[in-house]
Image 1 (cartoon, rainbow, N blue to C red):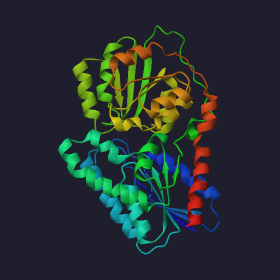
Image 2 (cartoon, rainbow, N blue to C red):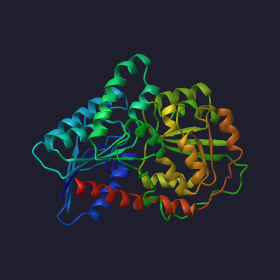
Image 3 (tube, rainbow, N blue to C red):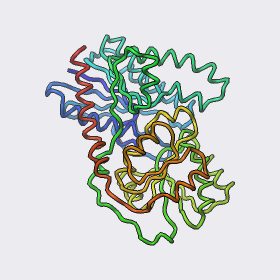
Image 4 (spheres, helix red, strand yellow):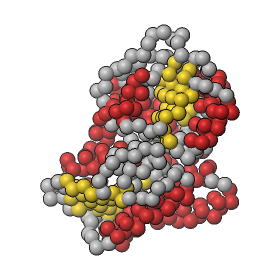
Length: 392
């Protein structure tokens, strides 16, 4: 049995897609028969222009070949991302041209890697398993100008239809995506394997913060700084509102970093610290030293369907969670995560009101950690992936 895995990001890159695929590959290697082989085609670390980590272009392991494609230097803009993807797609087509696979697996947030997987699977008459991490067609209507949407959306909708209909099975990382896909592709077979808590965040000592709540409290955010997060619409205003009471530490990079810097200057607040992306062991130390972990998604309809991967590692830390989210993610937090308060995205007054209800203490969320450990989720997902190859 030979499996092709397409994932634009993979370890040691820093992204939800990288962490997810790394865990799945490990689970697959444990479950596949001894004569099986995985060929993984990804990219050299490129998630953030401000973060680099060394990785070989070719790795050979028992049952696994990893090929990393070098991309041209790029930022987080759509044009740069499109150019980078075209380079990736060109090399993937070249590498796979004369090879046979029993299954193609593609994981995608922006649709294109999934579409590439569909093209390869169809050309080789091979089963395709899709892992969908975002509804790209739904998201772009909120982030692109109206004129551009009228031109691009019909094309992307056709690509989405081609891609989804090419798959034997589609996994959705958020149950919030299910109504969208079921209404459009009712005959497709779906599974729901979410993101989860990585091993690095399990069995950590519970780091208690100081008991003096009259001191300045540390609020930490780590992750992408893009239009989807909308941090420029909330953090500077909150920081100014809570000057002398809260200190914000924002770790990450992305297409709206400059907008965030400008909004901080405009708010004239001096309690926001911006830091470049860091490795996960350093990130854990930041989480442990923080009093509160902050999360925010922009006020767009598409984001009412998503389930941010950041919630899982935040919850594992046992710290209070302060989140500007709506829709399915807000419902998920209310149902599963203790001492986590949500407020409507971009609503500074509601955010300030919800903050007053947070309990500034650390506790172990045992039930959540047991249920959403990534290793358990990926073990079940690996079995689901293999079953598709067996029935093809």
